[in-house]
Length: 327
Picture: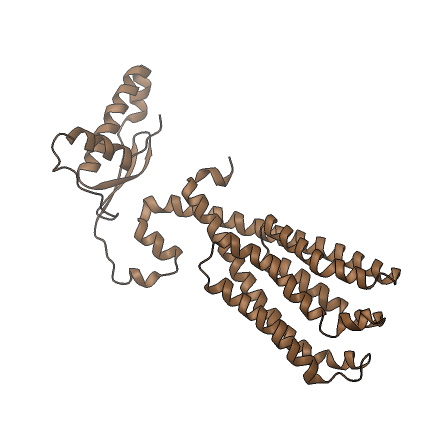
């Protein structure tokens, strides 16, 4: 049995939402980094471009990259952070739109010069292009569907146009395809393993939380897992922790038939759980004749005793709620 099936479906859905939110947050951070780098690259790449077109100035290379790269990346980052759209939708928007914005960076001086026959300029930008593509996969580490969408979008809006522009240079095409495939596969494997690790940790965390809640209560668990411990500063609970078992229990089992022992234990368990429920206690652990019980420490349950005609139902409900025994 995997960890997934040890928690209920609602918790599973919450985990998937948390994972998706993490992908969106990292995608937003990734866009901020790319926005900053694209603007800086407008300054750093000027000297390279000038070698192929002496009419280019630092300003003529900088402002288009800020306007068509830095600002769009920044706006897309803010959209992912602030928008109330569905998380899955935002994941796919990032995967599809980032490559389109990146393509506009290639169209600023570099691709036009390449289409004019100056293919050698691409050698100066190849490493940076591959870095941007693989950085998104490894840093964001999205789910498989988002990863496929990301690769498809980069292939459609970057790789195919680039191969068309460089179609007259087979050696350059071979280098581009080889590096694109190898680096993308490596980044996909790294991103997928990171996503699986985050997913496994999330399920383990939820399982531990579900096991811890009956012991310390929902309020304490919520404060711990939401990193909001100040909620507990003025919270005090006074109560009793009771550990009990039956003296001579093993001898009782040995001296009586199974039917007698089973009937006795059934009545005994019912007596314990109904008494615990009557006084607002919680049975945290039951093993045969042994019980770990607390009174006054857990969150209070609803009081239904003033509703006529359901007295026995209340006892049965409390028994089911506060106690689980091994059959």
